[in-house]
Length: 176
Image 1 (cartoon, one colour):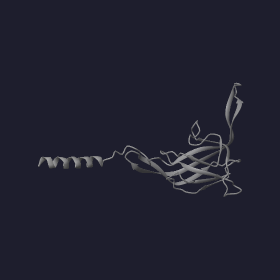
Image 2 (cartoon, rainbow, N blue to C red):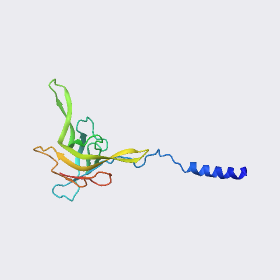
Image 3 (cartoon, rainbow, N blue to C red):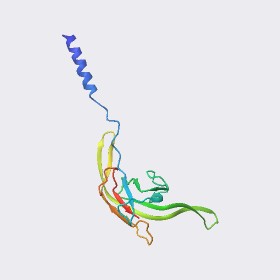
């Protein structure tokens, strides 16, 4: 009788342990990026590249790593802060290094180009993906706030999708 139970016990144990799978690989666990497309203000259906484009986060000393620096681009994807409800960026058109001298006659390099300051406001909604991925942030009620100056190169902003839960399509249109 013991000979009959051993193979059955072995088969049941094998299938029950084989059915368990560790959830330690995260495949779908990325917080989405905000996708922005740039359009021609005179022809609003046509994409228009921003020349020598640079983007820097407000309060940061480095460029946003998800965007190629000083390239011509008609679309970008940028991260929003996951711990705050507002993220600010400097959008710089025709970015260049300009050398000048300070009060001590030392040469310093400053940012040249046309700089506009743009803030994105949103409500964060954390979403549990899996044990391996943990939480990701989605963003709801997206809105924008452009610091108005006399010579803004950004002429208008349209929020296409106020819900940011993926990075597959443009959420924002910027006209210039």
